[in-house]
Image 1 (tube, rainbow, N blue to C red):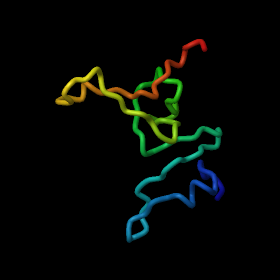
Image 2: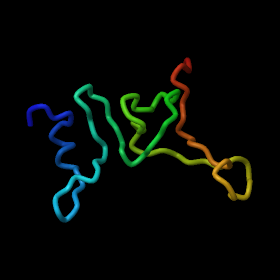
Image 3: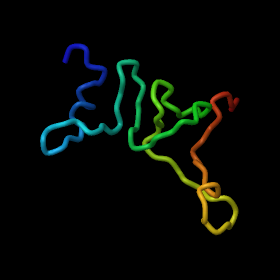
Length: 90
């Protein structure tokens, strides 16, 4: 389609309602070649895997980790174990 931001594989992966309305897409690739996983929202722009153009992750999956052996009573005890600081030198 002319003017479409997404490639043909992405179009094939669209999710629609019974009335045909597009409600979301998974694992999109923009014209820039940027892969966006719309299943993983993320606003941590300092992460190497942040999509930059939108608040999503570019990984296919992430590892959620907990701190120590804490009882998981609040969100503060968990983190994204896949996080890598964008400025990190290997």
